[in-house]
Structure formats: C-alpha cells, structure tokens
Amino acid sequence: MTELADPSKLLYKAVTYQTKATPLALTEESISLVKANGSYNVSTDDILIEIHSAALNPVDMLWHRASNWMVGSNQKTLGRDYAGVVAKVGANLSGKYSVGDKVCGVITEKFGIGTVAQYLVLNPTKNPGIVKVPTDVKLSFNELAAWPLVLNTAYNMLELHGATKPVGSSSNILIIGGATACGQYLIQLAKVAYKVKTIVTVNSGSADDFVKLLGADYTIDYTKHKNIAGPVAKIVQDELGGEKFQFVFDCAGNSDLFPKIDNVLKSKKEGSAVVTIVGDKKPDYETYTFTHALSLGFIKKNIKSKLGLGSLNYSFSMAGPNAEWCKRAMGLFEEGKIKITVDSAYSLEDFSKAVDRLATNRARGKVIIEVKKDQV
Ligand SMILES: NC(=O)c1ccc[n+]([C@@H]2O[C@H](COP(=O)([O-])OP(=O)(O)OC[C@H]3O[C@@H](n4cnc5c(N)ncnc54)[C@H](OP(=O)(O)O)[C@@H]3O)[C@@H](O)[C@H]2O)c1
Image 1: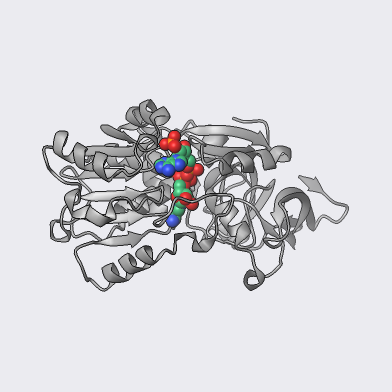
Image 2: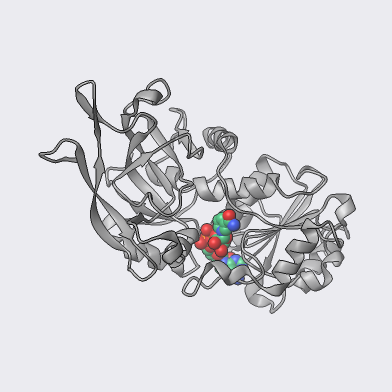
C-alpha cells in the first residue's frame, strides 16, 4: 500500500479503460479514505480488500466492448472475480469483517470498480457474492479467485431453470461445452450435489479425459461432427436405453438440437428445460458484443417459452451471485468434493497476455492475474 504524504489517499495500480475506444492499460489509481477516530478508513459500509489474485471471464471483454456513450466515460476497472485479504473495515461492518480476513468473490457492479487491481473498495451488502474463506479451506489465492462467477453461473442454471421438476437423481443431463469453466462446475455440481443419473457432455476430444475425471459419463466430440443432433440422439438410444434428457445446459452457444429437440428432450410436462448462458451462436471473442446472442430463433424461443406457448421450456440464464450458493461451494471445497482448475497465471504487468489467452477460447479452467505475487 503506497501511503501518500496526504494520508487520505491510497495509490494503487489497476487495469483500466474508459470506453470501448480506449485500450486496456495498467494505470495508477487512488482511493480516498476518510478520517474517523484519529485514523484513515474506508466509508462506514465498505471494506478495503488487498487483492492477491483476480480471474478473467469472457464477460470482462464484453463489458469493455459494451462501454459506449450510454455507460459514460468514467474510469472503469477490468475484472469481476477476486481473492485477497481485508485491509480496512468500515465502522458499520466491524463485527462482520476484520483486518486480515481472507475473502474471495465476484462483484456485481459493472461499469466502475473491478478486480484486476491492487485494491478494491467493496460494499458487501451490494455485493452478496463475497465469502470469508473458512480456515479449513486450503486453497491458494489463484484457486480462490477461479470459481466465484462460473460456479454461481452453474448454480443459476441448476436451480433457476423454470422446469416443474428439480435437477436430481432421475435426471439425465446434457452439458454442451462441458470443458468450459462454467461447464466444469455444472458437471461437478450435478454429480456430487444433485446426484444426477447420467451426464453427457459435448467437448473437444482433447478435453475428453478431463471432463470424464470431473464426472461426465459419456462425451461427444464436437470437432468430429458438423451437427451434434445425430450423436446426441445416438447416445440417447445406445447408452440411455432410449430415456431422453430432462435438462440441456448450453455453455457454448449451440443450436443444432432445436429442429428436432423432442427426439432427445423429455416433454415440458415431464419437467424438462433447456438453459443457455450464451444463446444460439458460438461466441467469437474477437467480435463478441452484447447482441451476439440475438438471433431470430433465440428471441422466438424466449418469447414463446415466457408466454407458456409450445412444448419447449427455454431460458437464457444470467449470472447473479448468491450468498447461499457461495456458502455451499465453500462446504464442497472444504470436503474436497469439487476441483478448481486454473488454466494459466500472469503477472499484473502481463495482463494483456492473460486477455489474449482468454480470447483464444481454448483456456481449460480460469485465466488468473496474480496481482500480488506472494501466493499462499
Ligand atoms: N449468461 C451468463 O450469466 C454467463 C456467465 C458466464 C459465462 N457466460 C458465457 O458462457 C460461455 C462460456 O464461458 P466460460 O468462462 O465458461 O468459457 P471458457 O472457460 O473461457 O471456455 C473455454 C472452453 O470452451 C470450450 N469450447 C470452445 N469452443 C467450443 C465449442 N464450439 N463447443 C463446446 N466447447 C467449446 C473449450 O474446450 P474444448 O476443448 O472442449 O473445445 C475451452 O476449454 C461464454 O460465452 C461466456 O460469455 C455467460
């Protein structure tokens, strides 16, 4: 922490941008502290976190690309996921947090604060995706930063699918994009927390062993098929004894199944659902924008499903952290039931290499920025 001659200011480095026209840059920022009871602190409802590790998500690139005139040209910091240590505690939070607490989480604020920074001032009430890491959870800061957004996304899909029956032991589920970071947690949660009957995943052949280790029962290599509808139907017939899927979870943006989805998906009456976090098109991170998902087919499916028309229960799931899910995740980490995968780690100075790695769409697990090197 660089304390200035003016003790009310804290200087730190962060990866920032103002609009989609300004490139990401490592800049020097400052936090204003307030004097209370003879010392300088954050505001009453905030905590100051010294970040050790931050993880990148595709949405970080999306927010940057989406920063047009409507969101203003204020300084914005990259990143949503973080792990670090509490450095200051606002007066109203003194019973809840202490200096030295290890914390991790995902921030919900979008066009302002970010986590690829040495310090983060956070209002925990406005950011429910914060967790105080129990001492029994023996994870590194890199690992602690690698799960919050994607694991909450997986819980969102498994819990808020809108089907009449929950995900459970009688469910066959299909995960398209099983090797994506979100898919990895879907597989593991479905297996250990929801105890589903069968998990079929769609991934490249190179990820086959990886997803099977996580819990996939059968896999389909999308690189070997122009359209996955045929191989999915074959698995239903050959491996599932003709029993269709109750849930299709799409983390890759694949619409191959829709023309004949009744062949592989149970009826809405039987409690089925299709949940996507991407839409109908595979994202190309170079040209990725907010509108990439908005094909006519995607809009039609959404409207029809919302109006209760047709036989398909379909929804687009938006990640929102949930304190209860974060708590459950900590329990699973503590018991060693969920594996966290880090693809690669870069220093703060090398942030652009981390962004490039994420943009390849080939990362297996999270791309991490080690903001503070002394990892524990
Ligand atoms: N709506 C929401 O709330 C929300 C939240 C989080 C993420 N998302 C979106 O969900 C998508 C996944 O995010 P993520 O962070 O989990 O991704 P990620 O980890 O960055 O995805 C990388 C993985 O994608 C797999 N992949 C690449 N092309 C594929 C394809 N055509 N079909 C299947 N798998 C493919 C690759 O594995 P292989 O070896 O199998 O190719 C690679 O390991 C992104 O589009 C992201 O924007 C949405």
